[in-house]
Image 1: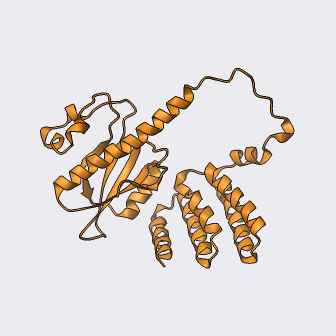
Image 2 (image 1 turned 180 degrees about the vertical axis):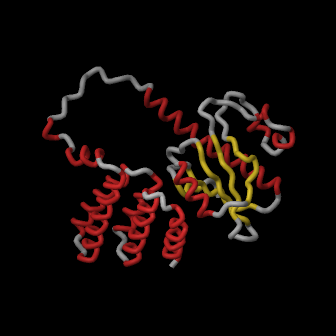
Image 3 (image 1 turned 90 degrees about the horizontal axis):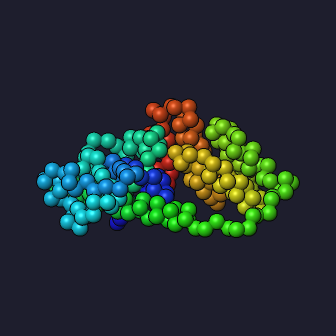
Length: 259
């Protein structure tokens, strides 16, 4: 299956992620561990007891200067629900990754944690490498023409100055406009509103799921309107730190998606 990002961007992993895996025999059972990619290249092999080192493929134990992902704990453990892990990832701004299904066997859960951690670390290393290549590109010898003041994006500057609550309020207004355009089959207005929502969504932290709000806002069916409302409600609960209410909203979102 590989790593599926439930939160975060696979093209730009943060370097710290919560991994989840479901039991093959009971999908309600969720195992989890935390993967950390140290900012300083290292190999954890020489720090592992023989019991743990034996579970990691030999090729992954080589290269003392490689970027390695460390699963903490080193084995996928049961104990937290998916809803709890989602809230935790939001609060900590971690990536949240589904790494597939596993059994109750400890060796398999240990191997899966190690393998997935190295896969995640490789994604992180690729991102860092690409960023380094871009930064090393020679600077242009000619100065770019100055942008006239009248061409500056005044709306963009205004959006940047807004608080998170103000941005959410603006997203809520745009969702209403998008639903009105959907009902009236006004394609031009819908496209314009979609671009404005997506622009605002990019300015919000991932935990508010702005991209999901934007997607639901333009959905052609009534379910889209309900999903957008639920996502907005969830965002406001986060900003108000009413975390106890979030699992109920998450369940409603999941049930609506499964219809």
